[in-house]
Length: 312
Image (cartoon, rainbow, N blue to C red; front, side, top):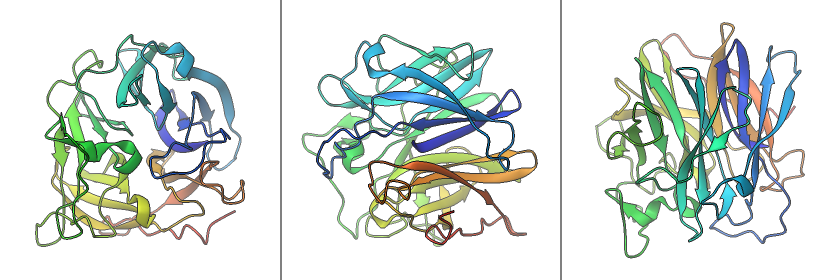
């Protein structure tokens, strides 16, 4: 299990990970070896006790009418008595879209809509609620296909910026009242340095994938994976759209190529959920979930966690 998205529902922690498997597909930069085909849901009453319940399969590729392949990182939101699961999946043309599935329970099963969200693309949806409004953050380069788009339109061919050019941004869009579509065109999530300039593609702290948003002391914390530099970083802003000023590293590299996380408060403590490939002996496509307490200093900065030092 990898890419854990974590929320508190019904006074419990619920974890929504992707489900790694050994598919036999050779590793490549498109991520074809990450050939997941269903989701499980997990829950726990107490993070420190280590007891966790597996609620089983809640959604499968075979149940999704428009499916091609590869169910990657998902997220779940709750509104008006319903739970909405957002998932990236390649359609039958091998293009990543974002779909929605709905349940009456946080542990599913989730029933998929017949079509992907209109205008959706790329991967790694994260849903953030603020003052009764729900926002989706999404996007990932390389296998996540974000380099194939500019201004929400597909390019004739993918374009990766040069190292001295501004990095490709994550995206954010307000969701419609029914939670099934975008209420607006997705906007860039711009990460800037202390001088106000956008991070460059060659910066080891630039965005790659795995958007996450949380609030702490009225500040908005946008966190993300840097992909090929193997860090979890964060930036802060004053509203859900940003811009977000880069602050630092949350998690240094772990065992395995990918790094992916979520952050949640539960019973007065903050936690970082993430994954690594220690149990599989370093196979980057066979990952396992982990959790560690996350701490802030007096200024609200997140204390960096050393990924390779904490492998218990």
